[in-house]
Image (cartoon, rainbow, N blue to C red):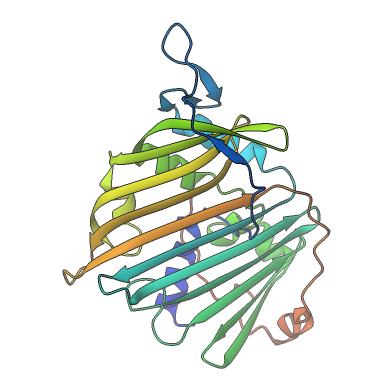
Length: 292
């Protein structure tokens, strides 16, 4: 992977949740369209950072989301940018499983220059047991490996530091800071109450402009499910915008968490190939500073 593509891939991970993150689906519940009850003061606390008026403290909700992920969870994120005629400008898909003994994450990207990478679709797979980290980069029939020993992985900073214990919370802080929200219903799943939160008014366009090189975001639509513990089980986001060349595009983003128990994660079959064939112990992805 060229340096520009590698940097962009690292930035994608930041935008996708500041970490190596998961695939899975949340349990299905039945949405009750009835209005959320309010207290005599007009607001009712429903979850950390969430009241009957909407998300009132994005930071509190983001921290609660991180705490609710538990030790084991899965995460799936997809971001797609399409032209007005429906063809894909760029797509990025990320799946991660965090288990009691480490994590595994796969990021698949395809698109035009300026998004994540140019040329053939690229897939990056990461695995760690908490002590070492290995990565495999597959692109256009070419496969490359990297191995990070304990010294590099656990005493580094930046990108690999963010991978040590994935807890993507920054994404939710930025999202609910940028979009005004309100609660429109509740659901019950496995004995836990969840609240449906929607948003259509953009407060901070800069948050979306930084993603996928799309400018002037408008027509924003957000729909999220937040549990009483503060876990953002899922959200779907869409908006229109323009690329640097002025072309109009439509951006969609979906994120789903699954906090059911995860079995120990076995090391990949290519572990030895990575350990024996790594050409750069520092890894193929530079160290941009990530928050989260």
